Length: 210
Image: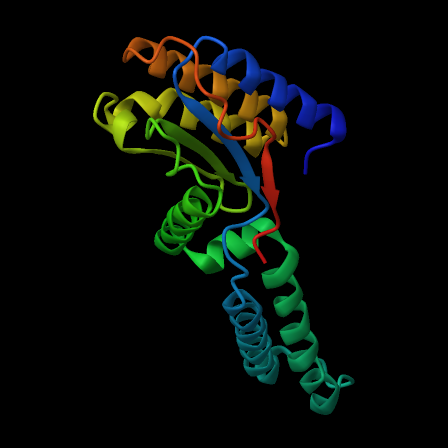
């Protein structure tokens, strides 16, 4: 997802932000939050169903020179095509997954990374995770206890919006940098100015979500 130069840009943005903050920021981008194996089967079922509907209509409109046995071959072919779209085509995959499932998956993956990366284990309980899930076009900001006590959830909205909009255009690094800057602004406004302990790495976290 991120090239070496893009990773360096994001790392530098975190380093710059934390230079004036008594808090830790961890940026993260995943290709997707879940493997979503059901989209392959749903795509195959949808493709097969459409082929069957076409076969039914063909009884009325089928040219006499096209035998029904030939048309039947379209059912498995359509099923394979639907499965491929459900596996690799982003818009189709998002449609098959559904908004609610994508929201749940992104929130769950963000929580897993929050704990796996030790964002909850800083001495000051001042860690903040910025998480982007590209397939779902979702972003989540999770903060530890000390930050939650001072920063209202709505304060993260500018960071989330900037990240989602940039990532949707394929500018993941731009989105992460903007989100880091806006998160730092929200933290500074809430009184987290100062110098942190640098307990967490500034390197962006990446994953495929498989």
